[in-house]
Length: 241
Image (spheres, one colour):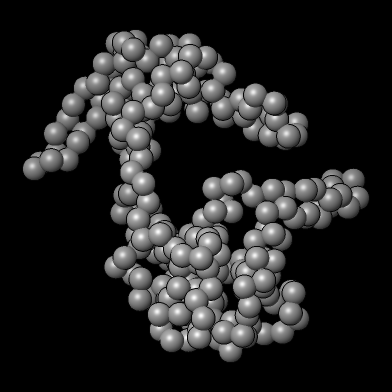
């Protein structure tokens, strides 16, 4: 993450935290060294969404006292609400239309985990008499290690990556995929065939890629700043994108 992006996220996190009840602010402050800046910002967004939901559902100001009186079902109701919700929009023809939105599995899991982490914090602080878990009876301290290798069969049909087997849920999703497909395939090809790290791909500029010579120019930090060239001879998809 470059300095400009980091500073931008820090400012947005500061604004989010200022709008949260003190109990959430205390949680984020106490976990400042345990969670990355990006994670703390995502937690703050989830907590902000949760308090907005409570304000609408309970029709009252959300204070620490209200938070500590909540039951497990209140948290589950929130997760159920954010999984599938409807928003109203005003069309250019000045007509109101409703559109159904669904949180992805990963988006919902993150909200579930962040709230569960918060509930464990409350219990450990002695603010709850009974531990509430949204993940089951116990919260695992560790997760299984990610596999070192990706199953090659997943890439047998590279040109159809990111396209669901059963089709898209809406024409909007299909249009989004078509518009972003060249970028998505290029990113996948660079990660799989050129050996770049995710943060290196994020920081790539168009000028760093020479399609004629099939070379990627990259600067890596070790002891000093080292410039390296990565051949793209195996990145077949980049030649056609």
